[in-house]
Each structure stands twice: as structure tokens, then as C-alpha cells.
Length: 188
Image (tube, rainbow, N blue to C red):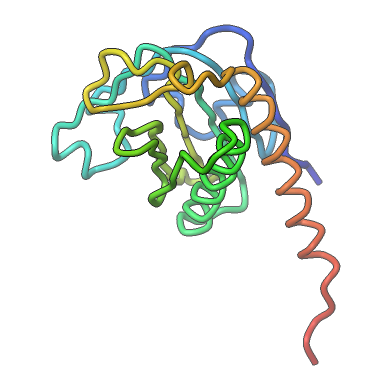
């Protein structure tokens, strides 16, 4: 049985939305099975690569000069389970950010994180024929974004430190959930 593999990519990767497809971690980093990959780089998602049809119909621009990105892939997921994992991942990020900030400054609304009225993140959950996929990006830079944003630089949070913390925390939570599922006795 394969377990969740974590990876922090040291090379910069420009996220365009094209990366959100099944087996990206396997094709790019030779990581087979459930995975979470973190990397730094700009974000510029063109309408043809948007998975959120609401954003696509609205003609929304999704752009950031620099973000911390996470791509998660699980091979046991339907769309609803993938959305639950996405929201759980974002709740975990709120917990980790607020701990660093020393106060509950970051709030989660669904899959989006905010500091006051300024957006910190983008996130989407989708499925392929073989897996559930999540992309979450948190701004490092808040300059030149199409909507009012905050970034990790504004909050004085080190992106690589947060990335490594989130990789470890998500993997540990997945292990704990798997253990909890396997130790429960069936009802009569």
C-alpha cells in the first residue's frame, strides 16, 4: 500500500493551471501515488486552464507575481471527498499561519483565506478519471494582483518554512485519519 509522499520542489515553477492534472507529481518528480507537492513561483491562470467555471464565466483574472503553491493528489477520491480534503487543508493552513502570527488574524471562508478584507489564497478541487486533485496557492507578493490581496511577505512569514510545515502537518493528519479508520470496531 502506498502512503502519502511529500515533496518540496527547490526549483521555481510558474503555475498556469496546466499542472492540475492526474499524475503530475509522477511525471514531474517521479512520485507515484498519493502526494502533496509544494513549490514557489508566479501564478498566471488563463481562462482555458481555469477549473472554476464561475471564475471562467466571470472573466476573472488569476495572477500573482509570486506564490507558494501546493498540489495534492489522492487516488481514492470522488469530488465531494476531494472538496472536504481541500477545506481541511485550508483550515490547517489557517491554524499554522495564526500560530506564526500570534493572533487569529487569518480567517477561512470555504476554501479561501483572508486577512481582514484582503484575499491571501486561491484554491480549487477537481477530479480526473483516476484521482482527486487540489491546487492551493498563497500569495507571497501582494503587488499587481487583480483583487485586493495580502501576501506572506506582508505578514512576515517565510514561505519555505510554511511550505515544509504544511507538508509535514498534512501528511501527519492523513496518517492519523488512516489509523483512526483502521482501529474502529464495527457496529453489531
